[in-house]
Image 1 (cartoon, rainbow, N blue to C red):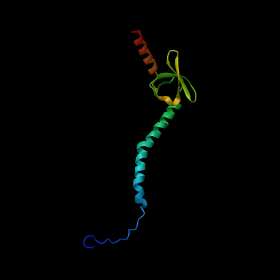
Image 2 (tube, rainbow, N blue to C red):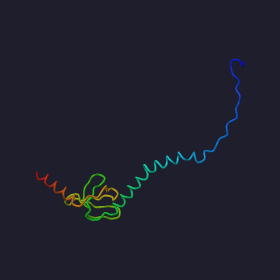
Image 3 (cartoon, helix red, strand yellow):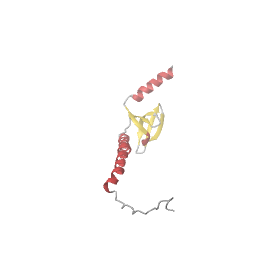
Image 4 (cartoon, rainbow, N blue to C red):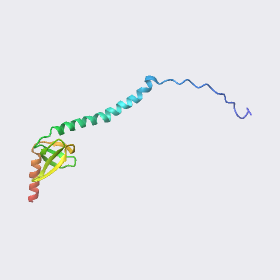
Length: 119
C-alpha cells in the first residue's frame, strides 16, 4: 500500500514563543489611534459645553438643540426659562442649550419678524 499512499511521519510541534512587547505594540497603537480620533475630541467638546452652560446669565441670548431662539429670563441649577416672544416663555433643561448668541441677535430677529407680520 505504500505505493499509493505515502507514509505520514509525525513531527515535533515547534515551541510556542511568548509574544512579549512585540505582541502588545499593535493593540496599543490601535487603542491610541481610537483614543485620539474619537474619545479625546468628545471629552473636549463636553467640557466646553459644560463651561458654556455654567457661564449662562440672565439676558443671554441662546439657541436650543431644537433650534428655538430665546432670551434667558430666569435660571436655576437644572432649568432655564426662555422668552421666545412677547409674554411667551419656555422652560428647558440646561443641557438642551446648543450655543450662546451674540448680544442683539434676538432683538434683530424679533424686529425682522415684526416687519414680516405687518406685510
